[in-house]
Image 1 (cartoon, rainbow, N blue to C red):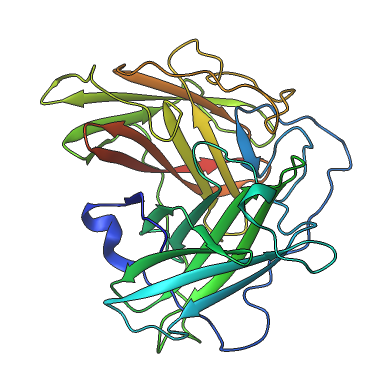
Image 2 (image 1 turned 180 degrees about the vertical axis):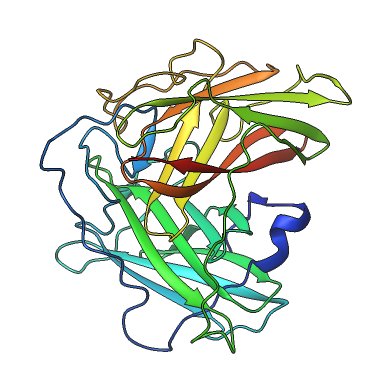
Length: 318
């Protein structure tokens, strides 16, 4: 079975529930990608999905690797454990084993599960289970629809993201879209730490690189015992309010290689800088949003035996 690395604590867990929308057929077909006719380069750090050097207007899902998703049980009940399995196949239909993928940030796959209302969040890592299958288990506490973003990099360096919408028993036809209010600059708490996310810009604009700073304290004092999480000073997940736009990026210490503009970097081949064993109280990242609207950002970093996650809502203007 896959080993679960992280699950959001506190009230954000309120709705993490996953199941298939239907027992057969395609699941949650995402919108078709739209190329950027202006070819504006997106300036952002180590990022997969939305934006990136290609400058596309919407996140591109799917790719050359065939992917199917199965849940066991097929229609889980809230409060029960569900087994999530992805089956990968190449162009000839042959299973893709673990050596057909690259280890990126210490894992073969990064699976992000969010509630449709974006109140719940989990960062999981399916592990190889043989025959081109990759599996992880999760406990699903409440009824609802959820979106799964599964990201992996093939051995030849192609990053692929899969998006699936799934639902628990009784939630197949129910929709509970996110209602987000901007809250940058407010203090959030996780894993015994307090975090405040800010940006120096007065208006966040699409297609313009935006720097973000997360300052972390503990008991009113600067937190200087922060630790790397999965090979980075921090991981950042960004999802639009309609869950159509997705990015998984990373940050660094102030002035570090991943804190600024990485739009020209080849993330599939570049050597990632090793963060120090202890650092703080600030981490930085830069992101370019390709579409206007409301977004939710989750910033994750290590602290002792725990992973702290700070969630914020931002408004992006045209």
